[in-house]
Amino acid sequence: MAVKYLKPMLDAGSSRVFNCNALTRKVLEKDPNAQRLFRNTPLNGVVLIKDAVPEAERKGPRCPPVGTKLYFPFNELDIYEGGRTIFLHDPHLQQSILENFGQNAAMTKEGLAEDLRVLEVMDSLPSLDPFLMKDVFQRSGIAVNEAYFEITPDQWKEIEIFILQRFEPLAKAAFPDAMHSDEKARRLVEKIWEAKDVTALAPLIEAFRLPPDKALEIFAAWKGINFYSFQYARVQPKLVEIAKWIKGIEVPFGAVPNEERSKLLSMVEAVKDQLRREWHGVDQILREYTDGYDKMFNHKASSAEFLGFLRNCSKAYWNLGSGLGKTGHAVYCWQILTGRYQQQAKLPWPVMHQTLRLLVEILQPEKKPAASMAWA
View 1 (cartoon, rainbow, N blue to C red):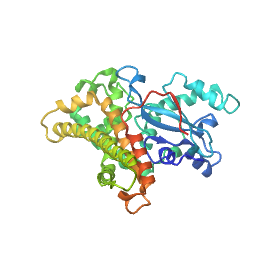
View 2: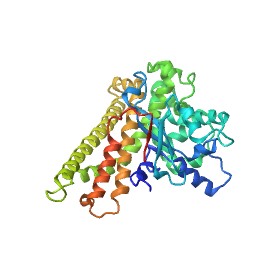
View 3: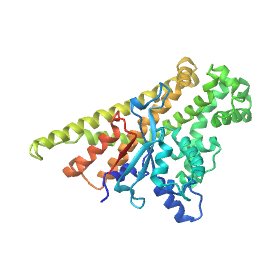
View 4: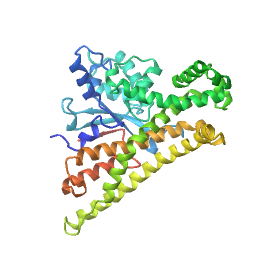
């Protein structure tokens, strides 16, 4: 029997989840001959999940706090029956993949090398938003079927315009003569967007004293931060809704046994604290970024704050992705589990317990080290 609480955890409704299994079925329904994401057919039945990397598994201070797990379902036709997971940074990843699927005509070492490159690119992101995935594959020069990225041309254009508008003042500040040439300014902004040409960006790197060896990483992270700023404005109303729901939960004496009541209240407080922590972290980073940006480009008051933020924005980028990924995933699962009830604050106790348990799992700050685990 399928584990019901796994469904919202594995559905492709959150930026922490890339359900390749479901997406592949959708792609092949439209075109049976369509190019799949992975060269090895069995890998197209997995789910990718962004999750916190336990402190004990982080290698050095520059190791990202967020990693990517492969979820191997026990049953490809019903992934909610459970499965096993392994982080992509696990040294036994390749061996685990081959053991899980078996090395045969459908699973070759030669094809696996190409598939591992695709996984590495996805692992380089803090979250699995369609925009970020499409963008990073374009920058990496890896051709993939864009049907896997569920983002319309209009959505892409809206995000693109938002980000390019944030880039333009930086280009004009570094190249004063660009202010008299819209075409030159446009080309410079495109170079920032691409984040691939160090030579073309050299004057910008020098003007703002960016470390040359990290410059492209900084520009890519800055683009990601602007994307997350765009997303945050859209998710805030939903965060307000779930926060009000949590605050309004009441467990009257006598409604359930005292022991169960105590557990429920404990989970309510845990979810409340964890959501507040993640939300505050996201808001703090974006406030720091916006304040520094406004001081430099809108108020012409000071450049120190913005340039300081820019030089260290890679860390902010990963923390934003982690925070928005967690809160967005929590909101999605909450909506799925409670949406059919008119009075969400008065859910049946089994549903309330299941919802709170899932939110605690999603929002928890630290995971115990576990390279592979069963979700059954």
